[in-house]
Image (cartoon, rainbow, N blue to C red; front, top):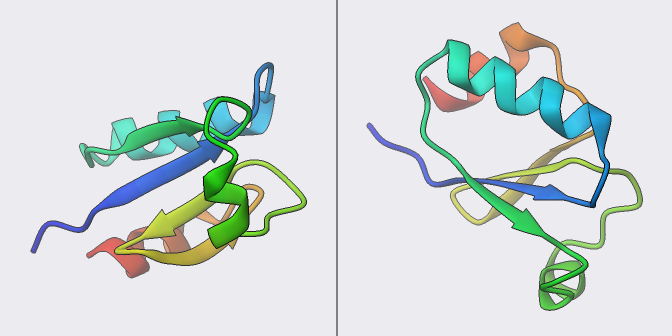
Length: 75
């Protein structure tokens, strides 16, 4: 099953790069959303720490999740 994954990032977010690399290694497609350019995402998902990881419209993680936990959510 394909999940819709969105990574909510801010400019110069080093943690975001780590999460993107993790998803790349799992061959999982995702969209990167810059919350500075799209502040409406903050209204829907009030994250205080980047990245926010939204899976199928639900905020599942903020910050860097454990790879196992991320894998479990999207498998």
